[in-house]
Image (cartoon, rainbow, N blue to C red; front, side, top):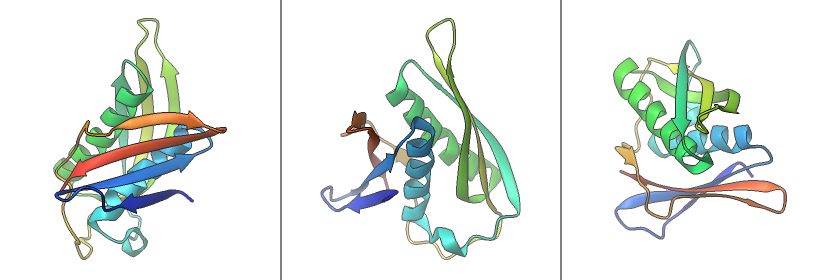
Length: 140
Protein backbone atom coordinates (compact mmCIF):
# COMPACT_ATOMS: atom_id res chain seq x y z
CA UNK A 1 0.00 0.00 0.00
CA UNK A 2 1.36 3.42 -0.99
CA UNK A 3 -0.98 5.58 1.11
CA UNK A 4 -4.37 5.76 2.81
CA UNK A 5 -6.74 8.48 3.97
CA UNK A 6 -8.37 8.97 7.37
CA UNK A 7 -11.53 10.87 8.35
CA UNK A 8 -10.48 11.55 11.94
CA UNK A 9 -10.16 15.31 11.49
CA UNK A 10 -13.27 17.25 10.55
CA UNK A 11 -12.06 20.34 8.69
CA UNK A 12 -8.74 19.00 7.36
CA UNK A 13 -7.59 15.83 5.60
CA UNK A 14 -5.19 13.31 7.12
CA UNK A 15 -3.24 10.62 5.29
CA UNK A 16 -0.50 8.11 5.92
CA UNK A 17 2.08 7.33 3.27
CA UNK A 18 4.33 4.27 3.32
CA UNK A 19 7.67 3.40 1.78
CA UNK A 20 10.56 1.02 2.18
CA UNK A 21 13.00 3.89 1.57
CA UNK A 22 12.96 7.54 2.56
CA UNK A 23 12.67 8.56 -1.11
CA UNK A 24 9.72 6.24 -1.61
CA UNK A 25 7.74 7.52 1.38
CA UNK A 26 8.33 11.11 0.20
CA UNK A 27 7.05 10.23 -3.28
CA UNK A 28 4.00 8.45 -1.89
CA UNK A 29 3.22 11.33 0.48
CA UNK A 30 3.21 13.69 -2.52
CA UNK A 31 0.88 11.34 -4.40
CA UNK A 32 -1.47 11.17 -1.42
CA UNK A 33 -1.53 14.96 -1.02
CA UNK A 34 -2.33 15.67 -4.67
CA UNK A 35 -4.74 12.71 -4.75
CA UNK A 36 -6.91 14.63 -2.30
CA UNK A 37 -7.42 17.34 -4.94
CA UNK A 38 -7.99 15.25 -8.08
CA UNK A 39 -7.73 11.79 -9.61
CA UNK A 40 -4.04 11.30 -10.40
CA UNK A 41 -4.86 8.78 -13.13
CA UNK A 42 -6.64 11.51 -15.14
CA UNK A 43 -3.39 13.45 -15.58
CA UNK A 44 -1.58 13.14 -18.91
CA UNK A 45 2.08 13.92 -18.22
CA UNK A 46 3.41 16.71 -20.45
CA UNK A 47 5.29 18.93 -17.99
CA UNK A 48 7.91 18.56 -15.30
CA UNK A 49 9.30 20.81 -12.58
CA UNK A 50 12.47 20.40 -10.53
CA UNK A 51 11.71 20.76 -6.81
CA UNK A 52 14.21 21.31 -4.01
CA UNK A 53 13.63 20.99 -0.27
CA UNK A 54 15.71 21.37 2.87
CA UNK A 55 15.28 20.76 6.57
CA UNK A 56 17.11 20.18 9.81
CA UNK A 57 15.82 16.60 10.04
CA UNK A 58 13.80 14.08 8.00
CA UNK A 59 10.43 15.39 9.25
CA UNK A 60 11.23 19.00 8.37
CA UNK A 61 12.56 17.83 4.99
CA UNK A 62 9.26 16.05 4.26
CA UNK A 63 7.29 19.12 5.37
CA UNK A 64 9.38 21.38 3.09
CA UNK A 65 9.07 18.92 0.15
CA UNK A 66 5.27 18.85 0.39
CA UNK A 67 5.02 22.61 0.94
CA UNK A 68 7.30 23.35 -2.02
CA UNK A 69 5.27 21.02 -4.24
CA UNK A 70 2.12 22.95 -3.32
CA UNK A 71 3.90 26.21 -4.07
CA UNK A 72 5.02 24.95 -7.50
CA UNK A 73 1.46 23.75 -8.16
CA UNK A 74 0.13 27.24 -7.41
CA UNK A 75 2.86 29.20 -9.22
CA UNK A 76 3.42 26.99 -12.28
CA UNK A 77 -0.19 25.82 -12.70
CA UNK A 78 0.89 22.21 -13.18
CA UNK A 79 -1.36 19.44 -11.86
CA UNK A 80 1.22 16.97 -10.60
CA UNK A 81 0.69 13.22 -10.65
CA UNK A 82 4.16 11.62 -10.63
CA UNK A 83 7.00 12.33 -8.24
CA UNK A 84 10.61 11.25 -8.23
CA UNK A 85 13.05 11.97 -5.41
CA UNK A 86 16.43 11.94 -7.10
CA UNK A 87 18.65 12.63 -4.10
CA UNK A 88 18.45 13.10 -0.34
CA UNK A 89 21.65 14.07 1.43
CA UNK A 90 22.97 15.77 4.53
CA UNK A 91 25.21 18.82 4.22
CA UNK A 92 28.22 19.64 6.43
CA UNK A 93 26.00 22.13 8.32
CA UNK A 94 23.82 19.14 9.35
CA UNK A 95 20.98 20.29 7.10
CA UNK A 96 19.25 17.78 4.86
CA UNK A 97 18.67 18.52 1.20
CA UNK A 98 16.37 16.90 -1.35
CA UNK A 99 16.28 17.18 -5.13
CA UNK A 100 13.29 15.84 -6.96
CA UNK A 101 11.08 16.05 -10.03
CA UNK A 102 7.31 16.52 -10.13
CA UNK A 103 5.54 15.61 -13.38
CA UNK A 104 2.08 16.59 -14.48
CA UNK A 105 -0.04 18.61 -16.86
CA UNK A 106 -1.34 22.16 -17.20
CA UNK A 107 -4.69 20.73 -18.29
CA UNK A 108 -7.04 21.08 -15.34
CA UNK A 109 -8.66 17.85 -14.15
CA UNK A 110 -11.97 17.71 -12.30
CA UNK A 111 -11.14 19.09 -8.86
CA UNK A 112 -12.46 17.45 -5.68
CA UNK A 113 -11.12 19.99 -3.21
CA UNK A 114 -8.16 22.31 -2.79
CA UNK A 115 -5.25 21.69 -0.42
CA UNK A 116 -4.21 25.06 1.03
CA UNK A 117 -1.20 23.91 3.01
CA UNK A 118 0.59 21.30 5.08
CA UNK A 119 0.18 21.52 8.86
CA UNK A 120 2.31 20.32 11.75
CA UNK A 121 -0.78 18.88 13.48
CA UNK A 122 -0.05 15.15 14.04
CA UNK A 123 2.81 15.40 11.52
CA UNK A 124 5.20 12.49 11.92
CA UNK A 125 7.77 10.46 10.03
CA UNK A 126 8.84 7.22 11.64
CA UNK A 127 10.48 3.94 10.79
CA UNK A 128 8.54 0.86 11.89
CA UNK A 129 9.56 -2.71 10.98
CA UNK A 130 11.80 -1.70 8.06
CA UNK A 131 9.16 0.66 6.66
CA UNK A 132 8.83 4.44 6.75
CA UNK A 133 5.41 5.81 7.71
CA UNK A 134 4.54 9.48 7.20
CA UNK A 135 1.47 10.91 8.90
CA UNK A 136 0.36 14.22 7.41
CA UNK A 137 -2.59 16.56 7.93
CA UNK A 138 -3.30 19.13 5.24
CA UNK A 139 -5.55 22.18 5.40
CA UNK A 140 -8.33 21.94 2.81
